[in-house]
Image (spheres, rainbow, N blue to C red):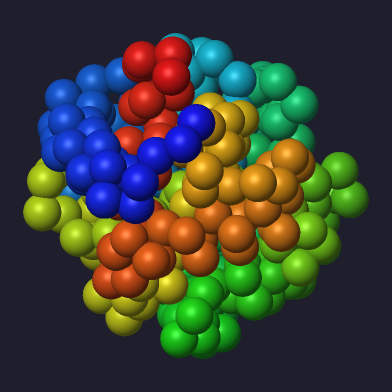
Length: 256
């Protein structure tokens, strides 16, 4: 598809306005953290929801709701103060390859991060650069699995330095960092700039990006993500990841 830079910019800006609004929440997993108002509850709900955000969207939403229910709809208090007996019901959980043992591991790891490092935001901020959060994500995985852990659970936290596009963590970071101007993202992490976010690259956004000439690489990996990020930052260097709405909407809702 041949399209001028001006036409591309106009198309993407129009689609951002169309999809980056509250009605988007109704069919998106971001509705789960929107059930909460306290920062830590939002963070934990968002992180766990993003962790299982692959496959059928309705299934993602239903299973993320179940996760919250198993945590007594009080995720921060559950993470911080759970007893061993509280974890037993979590064993019944399953979403594709993420099972109850993984869920329990994630609760334990989150408890470690909140007690030891005072939360998630300081960890991502610690290793952020002026250009990206790839090292931050890599280091976050190390912190996350500092506690005794199941080897099988490590596959559920991506590492961009291992050539992963880290779609789910980048989506989580978009939720936390992008401003709440339209009522969709939360903007509760003010210490990190939206300018350094990366697009949550998946099959839908990747295919649309290729059709629009924003991406040439065929695989959806870390190298492709850098290519896409570079091109989106040319369009808006301060908030490049807003175009995730345009790419996702064109792919999922319009079959572009």
